[in-house]
Amino acid sequence: MIKQIKLIQLILLGLFFTEVASAQQQLTLKQALNYAVENSENIRKSRLDIDGGRFKTEEIRSQALPQLTGNSSLTYNPIIGQLVIGDQSFQLGKKWNANAGIQLNQQLFNQQVFTGLQAAKKSERYYNLSAELTEEQIIEQVANTYYQVLVNRQKLNVIDTNIKNVKVVENIIANQYKNGLARKIDVDRIKVNLTNLQTQQEQTQNAVTQLENQLKFYIGMPVHTAIVLPLTELSEAITLPELADSVSLDGRTEIKLLNVQQDLLKLQRKAYVSEYYPTLALTGNLSYTGQSDKFDLFKSNGSAFWYNASAIGLTLKIPIFNGFATRSRIRQADVELKKAAEDRRQTTNSLNMAYENAKISIRNSISTINTQRENVMLAQEIYKSTQNNYNNGLAVLTDLLDTENALTEAQNSYTQALLNYKVAEIQLIKSNGNIKSLLK
Image (cartoon, rainbow, N blue to C red; front, side, top):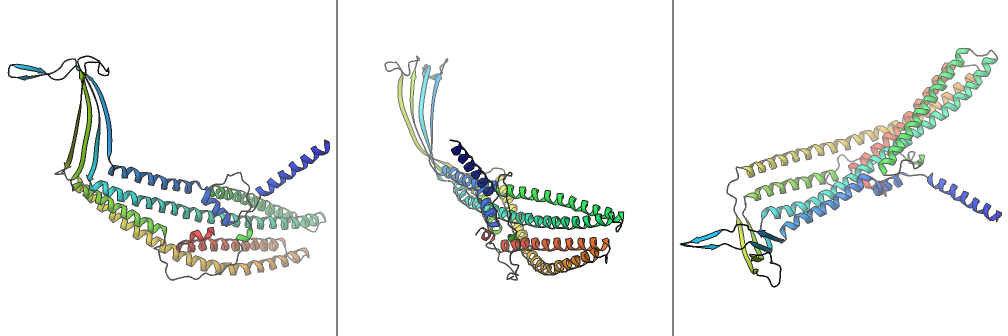
């Protein structure tokens, strides 16, 4: 029994460490993006809008279908009116009246209803495109944040390395000071430098944590979930893609969405114009009425008199004058169409500007990456040489600290250039309408 208990404890312990290991598994960019597409609250809401648009179409479609209404009433007349003919009068009805019936109304011609059906169908397309645009925006947002996390992690690694180096120098100076070979000011300066680095370390670590939480929020992941991003995502091969002089915007979701909005505004204007048109509807009703002087309407052997009535007809409505209200609405629709044209022109210029800026940024980033890579190597050589000279008494502490700061700055500049390249690359992919290719 004791052996079995120990075995169970070992199994549970193994399951615990397995769970911890799986919770710490690496999250690649592709995995993060696909997770966002499935779990982002904004994307889910946009998909719900698609369902809502479909139900809105069904609602408008119902206006073109037969409208059936049932009604019933029970009336008591304390005083019954009289019909006087010559010297005689006749009682109009009975004290108790009951009525039940059904009414039919079917639109035969109503241009507003027909136009509304076209607009509802076009609205479904609008909601689909809105959901697609939301998904693209989330993909871009997640990708940018993902690379920001990697860059700040890389900066944190640089600071960690610098702290280790400074601590080594601190020990050397402390021993030299004990032996009378170093000044008190050198000890104080290295402590100040170490304190500054530790402060930067804490600030950068907080920034990494905040960015990771932001990333998890964007993709719809619980904030307490532990994630590890592989650094290889930031150090992939850097190449200059083929850059066209211009890019076609017809495939961009933003332009498609504006086109649908313009179509909806045209249909709205058409609906206003339809107010000038006559409407024709088929009407019909069937009723069953009972009358009695006593409240025995619903007794099988009562004195109530019951009779049927029905009618079928056509209702034609011809608008004549409504105080120029329809004309005002049409003119408002014309203004909205002109504003939509301006929005389309502005969006086109904005997308073209984004593409041109992305081309400039990616060229500059590649140039900066190559320059800073060489600069980092040179700064490392200078730092090692200065450190060796300092250890041998051939360089002062100021030179060592200066070369260390120069190395840190070069490393951070290189990492920032990598981020700029990735952001520009995302913008180029988006400009070509292929932002969803990041999911594959």
